[in-house]
Amino acid sequence: MRLVALVLAGGEARRMGGVDKALLDLGGAPLITHVLRRLAPQIAPVAISFNGDATHIAHYSKAILRDTVVGQGPLGGVLAGLTWAAGIGADALVTVPVDTPFIPLDLVARLRAASVEGGASYARSVDIEGEMRAHPAVALWPVSMRADISQALGDGERRLRIALKSAAHADFHDIPDPFTNLNTPEDLARARSRMIFPPGGESHDI
Image (cartoon, rainbow, N blue to C red; front, side, top):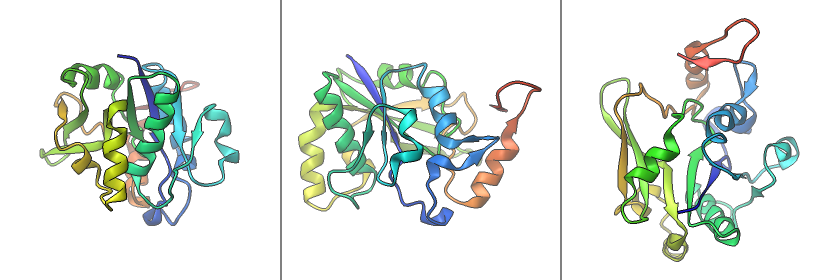
């Protein structure tokens, strides 16, 4: 199964004041940089779903994808990604939100291992309160799901978890809160406190 990846960065980030989340600073680097540092060694190529002015992110990927129909949420980005993946001969697409800078370094391998007979899979992890949480934006999507997702969007269904209702799940019990979403300025501040900065080196999460 040939996999490619998509960073979902097309949201409006209203709780962040409407700024481009991809370019928010975390420890001296944009969020998109942190995600790609972890994702790119695992899988290639990596496209970026982005509906704003792509001038400042064009150098991150040769494939900057816009939603076919704007306003459909992350599922619209997934559909654009699956269309791109099919066009380059891939069998499935791995998606990761741009505001999850602490994704595991073995994410792709574990999503692939969880997939049953080439089907979809998504990540689950234990949050800081000890509760198991699903992360449907962190998922493996077979290209064969394109028609179903297009139909769902046409019917007004935008929820990722509904699109993945029959998918397998990959559990990440062993990593503390690896899919932390940075939705608010307070979330970003907490993420900054989670970083460590070795002298002269790159930042890493604790």
